[in-house]
Length: 103
Image 1 (cartoon, rainbow, N blue to C red):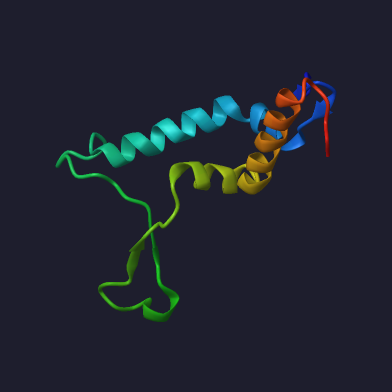
Image 2: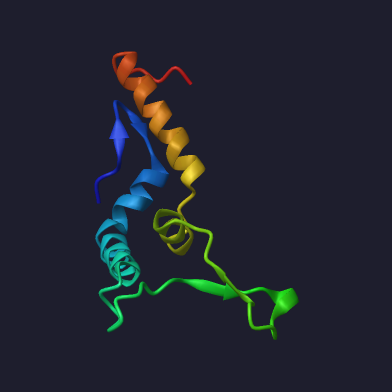
C-alpha cells in the first residue's frame, strides 16, 4: 500500500480516500443516475429524503436530503472533508516551499 505523500509529509485522510476511490466512484455514479430521472419510467428523478421527527405522521413530512453526493460519500466512508481540505492546503504549502514542511 503506497502512502499519499508530498515530499516527506504523509496525508492519512487522503490515503483513506484513495483506498475507497473506486467504490465511492461507483456509488456516486449510481446516486447521480437516480437523480437524473433515468431510473424511473416517468423520467422523474428519484430523490433522497428523510422524515422530520416532529412531523412524522403528516403528509408533508419528507424533507430532501440536504447533503451533496460528495458529503454523503464522505459520511459513508468516514472521511473528514475539513481534514481533506487542510491536507490539501498543507500539500500546496509543501510544494511551494520546495518540498519542506513548514508546519
